[in-house]
Image (cartoon, rainbow, N blue to C red; front, side, top):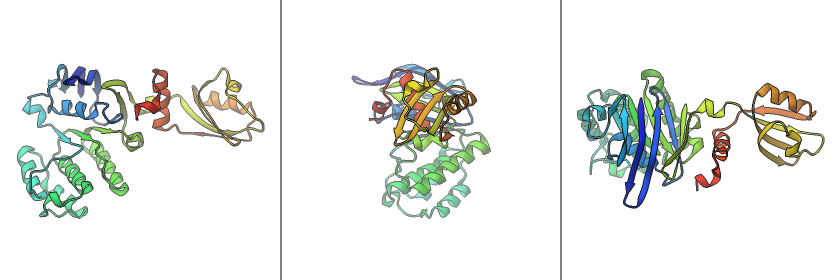
Length: 299
């Protein structure tokens, strides 16, 4: 388990993280979302032991991370802009990682390189941004450590590679209980891979919840009525969103799904369908409840 308590970090007058406390259980993917400058990169570098906290603590399985080599040997960090040695090749980076991580799987790494058509003998400096990100992900996964942190891991990858990388993460979680913390400024990027989600804004953690819990009790409905309806028509129901496009109404309610269906059917809709709520829609509701304008959080 990863646990932070009242974690603070400043750079001069800039407070990057402000009393962040969160518990991240083992064996899953925790998605960290927030706008640029929200504190995501700083948070991941503190989790990795790259930065020393100004105050508060970061622990993995009850042990402090900073300047603790035994703990650091159990984690790997994929930076937004991955660093490779000057003039190094993938083969040379493999040799380095093999020396740092005892369980590094060189055979699997070379298999991945072949599958992705990455030349093991070519200088990495000649790789595109996407190829460098692919290489960083492969190196990290082949360390076989239990904790992996990725900063904007999908950025720079084409849609096919994004899907492939997500599948690899999912396989690692299922096969060996990998714990991954992945940051992104794009909610949709994380929705189909994360089981927990956290929202950082201006250095503070606004919420951290299980994805299913975040969505539970929220129901999206599309309906057409034989007459014009307004939000006041749903008094007594927990209507959280109301939009109209022509004769089609799209609404989000909180509460029991069957009760919502029954109440709406009493209004005799011409057409009605209940749809799954997206992560973005759930976030809009939760941030509004907390007193924030969701749209401004990602500007």
